[in-house]
Length: 374
Image (cartoon, rainbow, N blue to C red; front, side):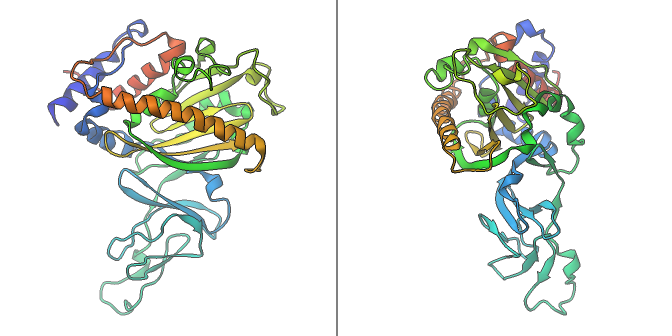
């Protein structure tokens, strides 16, 4: 382990011992060190539940999409048996990909030597291999990764060692249940790359301190910083309630189960380590983060809603709002990533709990996995 990675582990361990009133951000190298990214990849990301997207992307038998996560090529396929699987998108012959992009298929064909697999991952055809010594089709199925669904989001565990997901999110489920996230339809999905460390984006999404300053014309009129209230968080998640400006028009339609208090705030939460969600009363914005080197993050972001009509004007308006404030965040975070290359930033004091307590929660999460005393 490099001196930088070791030093950052020690800093995490130290910060985790401080009281909340002394909460501080991590130093610059936490976001810029390739060695620390290697460490967190192997000891955190590969061992945790990582969100890949929304099951609304594969609603029908034969639907699929491909993605990557930490250099693993993944194929998300809705099998003919009705099960959604996360398969290795790597041919069992000589390692090429078996599928590209997204669509609907009855089989997946590696274009290199035309080995064919069914939608459950079983090998069904391998030209000129019959009778070849050592060839057993039953042993050439695409490997399946452990996966779980929670409120419509699909998670994978690359190591197969993660604790069950559902029990870890029980407290969060109680907070969001009246918003009925599982009943919301996927209205929009898109991919992007931002030039910042993945943790910078996670932290940015999860704090309300920047809302009024960064999003003066987009989000400040709806959810100003001064109305943010941190929620009670759990070991696998953190979040806050973004309360609405009383002068802003009601954000209906409302589900009949929402309380009066729930009608006037959006739960903003992050499920460690890579899913962030803004759950408004009528729509949900989500982002699935994938580190792409120390200075870039790949994003699958989407919008779900109560109505299954992607062409509805209300959907288009909400997607445009998301685009507008995403542009603002992207600009700030890409500047931040450049600034963090300095040797002279060692982590500043965090704002009060309602504004940046989620950052402190995230520091503690990382410390539980990586913190090490001197």
